[in-house]
Structure formats: C-alpha cells, structure tokens
Length: 308
Image (tube, rainbow, N blue to C red; front, side):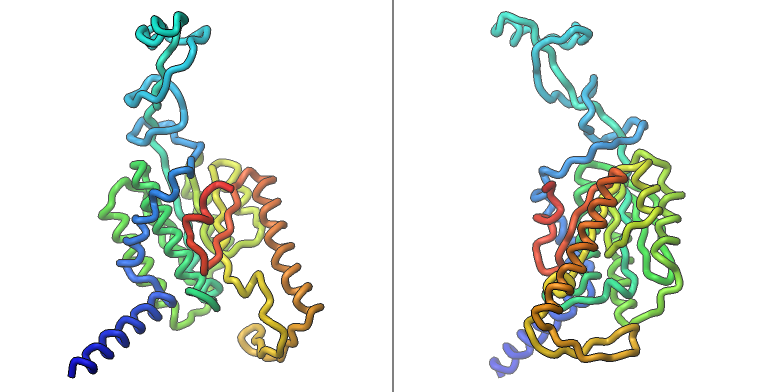
C-alpha cells in the first residue's frame, strides 16, 4: 500500500513537470520573482517626464543620496559636503538620485510559432517566464508596468500600473492563453499588426521589451526611435545546432513531409542560416538603437538577459 502511494506521488510529480514544459503555471510565473536579484546589473536609460517613485540614473536634487565628488563650476553651493571638504582641503559636493516616473511595457508572443521545443521546454514557456521575470524586475523598481499579449488571434492590452495584484492578473491571463493555444490555432492577426498597436499605445520615452522570435521589421524600428527597446529573441537549441548525422522526417507548411539527411554539408548550411539570421537581426537592432538579447529555451533566462 505504501509502495503504491509512493509510486502515485512520483507519477503525479512527473506529470506536473511535463505539463510545465508545455505551458507555465501561475505558480511558476510567480516564482520567477526569485531570479530578480540576478538582474542587478541590468540598467535602464530612459525615464518619463512625470514625477514618480522610480530612482533613475539621472543626477540632480532628489530624495536619495548617491555619492560625493569634487565641486565643479555651476554646482549648487547648498550641496557642498562641508565635512568631506574640510577633510580633503578642497570643496566636494553631494549628488542625489533624482526621482522620475518610468513606464515599462512588455510585448509577449504566444502565437503558434512559439509552440516548438526539443529540449527543456517549449519556446512559449521560456517567453512567458522571461516576461514574468522582467515584470517582477520592473515592479521591484516601482515602475509603471504595461503588457501586450499577442496570441495570433488578437492582442490583449493591459494599461501600465504600479500594482502587484494587477500584475498577478496578467500572469493568470498568460497561463490561460498558454494552455488554450496548446490545442493549436490558426493565426489571423500578424505580428506586424500587433506591434502597430504597441507603437500607437506607447507615447514615447518608455522601456519596451519585445519577447518572441523575430525578423527585422519597420514596426520594431518605429518603436525604437521613440523608446528604449529590448528585442528578446527566444530560440530552441535545434534551431541553432543541427542534429547528429542521420535521416529525419521533416514537415513543411503543416502538410508536405520529406526525409532530410543531415550530412556534413547540410549541417554547415543549416547552422549558417541561423547564424546569418541572428547577425542580421542584431545589426538591424544596433542600426535602429534597439538592444538585442538572445534567450535559448534550455538555459537559465536571467544569465542571458544581463548586459553582454
């Protein structure tokens, strides 16, 4: 009897783990908060022009003291640190963190092309976990956080708020969409159309994370010209590394099937295609002032988001 109970426990645990590889649970998305400290070196540049609670990189008179430095012509004499000045025998002035309000938007692709994976988990799961991690990170700085969830059928827009209960509702919606789309749906709204909604929605001077699998597009360029954009390109290991030599059945356009032989020549072409696509997108982002990050589905997310 005890053996049967133990076996049932492990079978249930294995089934739960398998399900997490296909669609993330709310608990998993909430647990991404634990990885926020690993992003301590991740710094944003932009802030909005409204006063708020977020400590920005801009220096000026504010609430939080940051450092002292030698007095420079034009500094406010009220900021002179007289104790340091007396000790160093030259004038030093205090610098403060200026308080600014910052908007952060996360656009997440949960369309059918993201439901692919060969190791670890589906790309859709990695993308959802990445969105959750960045959301928790933004809230840790008291930023106003907005979301756009692209399903292939439509785009759900969530207005920017600085509220954890609101964010949990967004995570619940991500869990729901991820599970529903496992059944397979036909995309009726293009990525470009969804990004156009974002371009109209974001007023400018915001931080925008685009999470999915991308090609260069004018919509990304337009968003980048007005905002600080991070293109987070999620991929599976099989997309970058050709499988070992052998014959493999392959399906094209959901209909045509062929047998592919992964010879040495084929491997070189296969891997060169991915590398050229990656390089092209990275150059496009650099040209338009966007930041480019790659996230492989079977590797820790936080280590791939940090500045290179």
